[in-house]
Image 1 (spheres, helix red, strand yellow):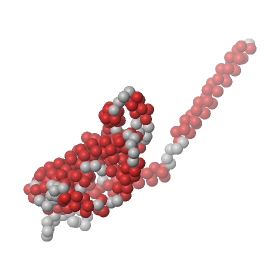
Image 2: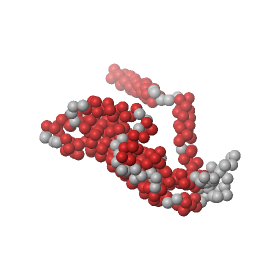
Image 3: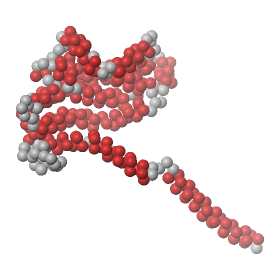
Length: 310
């Protein structure tokens, strides 16, 4: 009888305990799930800010695409213009190629961009590795000089740059356009940060094994900074491809014009066709889209490497 009472008591108590513990666990789960979760007001604020940023950054681009596809009889200056082209056509892109030698200008821009990208990929990598991993006298002073160059805007030194390029006999040449941007100080600092993120123990082990600085760079450094290298590659390409002021100062011969400088001929003295200008803008923007689409996974990996050290 005592055993039966014990079993009955146990049988009633255990389910009660299980049910109460289950309710308690459910409350804990609900509490944990709700802890730190944004409220409705915060969610509305977040999505509102995202929509504002989206409108500021994406809508002008979409508007340019829409304008470049509009037919000659659509009024782009109407008080309430249509966002979607009523008569979509690719004729504007053909007119751009017929108005200016757009492919020659694009090739010139590509040559300049390739020189700048190669210079930054090699020069910034070597300089960043030296500042991060090699010990030499005056390293801190050199780093301070690199940082000081970032304070000055480019317009301050543009006259001295032009005098230097002209003194070297590179005025009105594509090499003269590319030379000042072959090594960017910001890219050097980014590569230095990427090399510093590599654990020192790995570098010390390579030194103990007798690895030379060049071997440490090739076999240890470069495999760990490919993400950051893709970041500076994209930044260098975009900077060289979109540059307008410096090529405008250096170049005189229309045959050597880059694409950004050559597109100014689409804007006539007395008339301007916004459809052709928008089409030319899209032509100049296409290579940047292709480059970023092909390197985007390395780009975001490089951003993460720069944000998280160790």
